[in-house]
Image 1: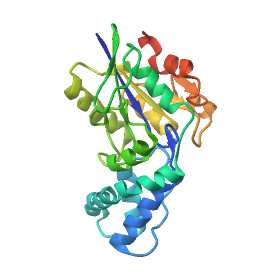
Image 2: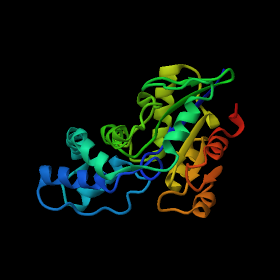
Image 3: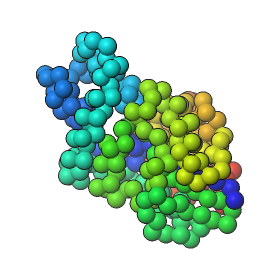
Image 4: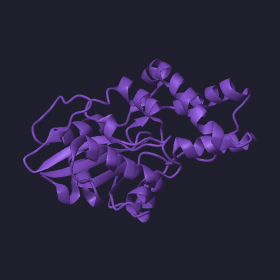
Length: 250
């Protein structure tokens, strides 16, 4: 049976969280260091490890690398408390829930819960996350909006693990292999994201790259970055399936 690992980005691919993540950064910085957090450059496509290191460096923290894990731990402790704010302010992007459900139902299996996988006669599909967010922040952005039911969050990789997004691909493949066995190398891994950094991470690791122009980058920019397929958004489920499955179609 062929195995396919589909790794979704979170921000501006599945959800618009209305800046809640940046507010978490500010609250955490204030708790640990006091005052206003210096503003990092663009967060789009970057990992929380890279962003936190930049913030601490801009703040003039001595040996900032030594504080990154503590900063993330403080963020993680605060993140679950954001669920109400997410429910109030964030929104699932058009078609996101349907796309994940359709992939889960390829074998006629619906209603899968966390930690399960959809299987067809020819393809076993595992859906998870590859996101710049730390895991507790990714979860709180998705769960209140009903977007975790078809994801195995243990099979993904999160932004506290490395500054370089491509390194997360190797980690997600290892996690998925440990959970399900088999090999998710090459284009048996599919990354879906809204930035050229998502695409670059896929290409650097031999994965299939699907760009979604629902963030700050146009379809033309995502195509120019090398995406194998580009979608305007996730609203046309049949187009999403074709882009994601590619040669692995059922």
